[in-house]
Image 1 (tube, rainbow, N blue to C red):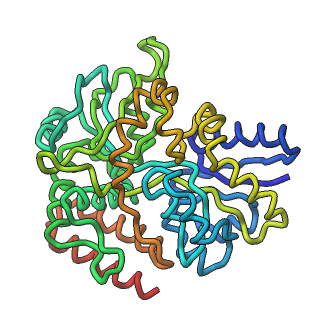
Image 2 (image 1 turned 90 degrees about the vertical axis):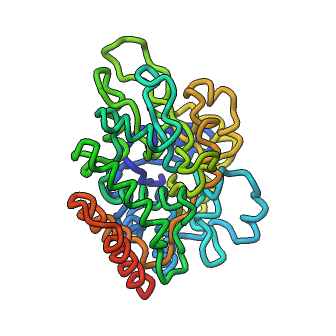
Image 3 (image 1 turned 45 degrees about the vertical axis):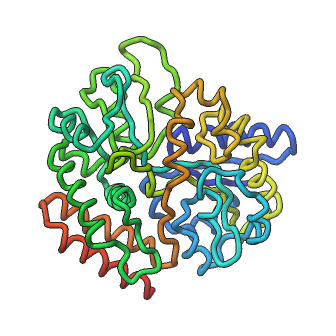
Length: 376
């Protein structure tokens, strides 16, 4: 038997449970999946999980730390990764490549996109001014709980033409990131202050409530779970549509969204390493991704699944409507000191947004934290 750890949401658990059942029927290998909260998923040390589990679902910013700690087993070499080509959406595959080895295989692809309620809003806002008008009317929510506030700053910086400089010494450009911060500060001042405590799941849950006034979220990680058809009963959650990011300039491309998604990794401590690797490769491959992973409620990373007509037909064209944002997404820093920086910078940004601090001192403070993180 193999033990796996994933994150506690139907999108994170259900498809893996469905694939595990099929895998057991096919190979006789049983896999038991356990779950941890989204907050734990974003911050809990992978090395500790590797002591207890054979299979671990991770996020790409952990790869520098896990490489230093040698707690995960490499799955492919850099040369093998090159052969996979365009099998995965955007940088989903490349984001798990570090120091010549692949430390996880992408099973879920996501980035910050725009979400709206089609029953409350015929078409989503096409520019930032229109979105702020909706916010002024009390119709906008945005997840600003750490680290999602920092992800929004990253995304807006990318849309402003100033994606983060992962090599440093300053992560954020003062002018481009300064503009991004001012946009985020203006938005935060108009929406419910509770957004400072909300993650994407909390925002989308509230948006989908039948009597919710929220019609739009301009910066939220896409969750296909909320786009799938439901009964027309007014007592049930309403479907949410997702689309590409709002460009900051007319005709601008939706480039620079902070890449999310997940990958499946194998513990270097596992006594069943080969069996775990076989499952990881299968569940990340097109057969599973286009089949039981999608039908089991997942949001695959496979390009073939994103192109699938049936997958789009049952999700308000979630995949087609957000693909451009995914293809132009920005890969966060992945060095060993990044994860503590992400938490510290997110908390610093939350305090700045709550107090209305000016852009200059906020960006300078985040850059100082990044410079310190590069030395760790």
